[in-house]
Length: 156
Image (cartoon, rainbow, N blue to C red; front, side, top):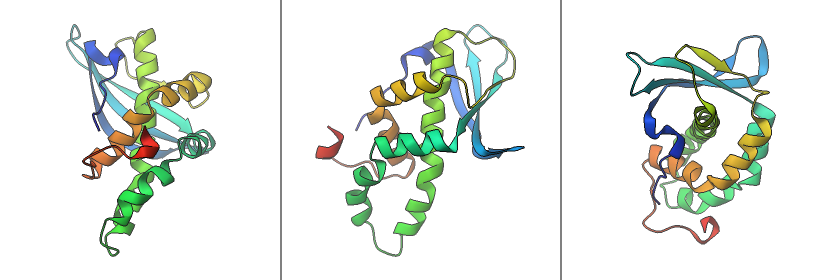
């Protein structure tokens, strides 16, 4: 499965800094922080990208992530599965928040540290993740070092 390169980030270099982490004072919100550097900038900025746990859960169900990965996880030794499954939620959140960051990059990003709040770009993110489902799944599998030799029928 090829990891598609987000078109909006061609002029930006984006690196996950950390996350997901709970947002202080907002128990139903997680955030990932990305370092973003545009080629013309002397230095990069940090962008905190927040997402509500309800939206994240709804996207996960809509993409049928558990079903997509179940067969791959069954090929793992039983004693290793919990480790992989335990990382799944964090990696999924990273992929989805990266999609949200890409939406902001498309509309322009100023050269300052900033926060994209959970209630911003909600419908746009839902639509973007539907279009970029294969990116999200490929990101998770790549980070788990479980890239299958061929796409599963459910991912086509």
